[in-house]
Image 1 (tube, rainbow, N blue to C red):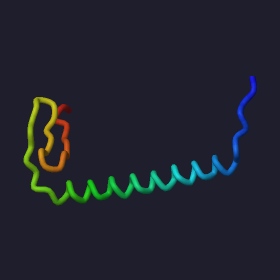
Image 2 (image 1 turned 45 degrees about the horizontal axis):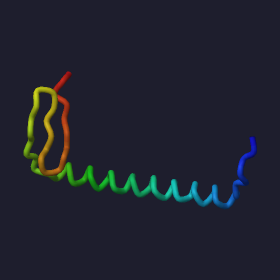
Image 3 (image 1 turned 45 degrees about the vertical axis):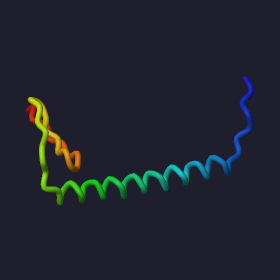
Image 4 (image 1 turned 90 degrees about the vertical axis):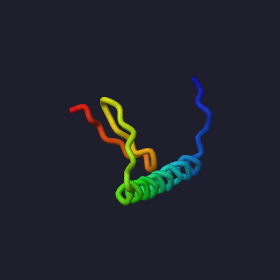
Length: 63
């Protein structure tokens, strides 16, 4: 079974892009955490969880 030729630079570029995107995801998750910490929550509750309708923070009520 023949494999098509893989350019090493293409792989390196893709890996760098993955690293850049993971860093961006971490930044966005940090922003979400900061927003949720500062939020004055308004919860919608079900028997097993509650979720803030403003910032989407969730808490499990099922222990």
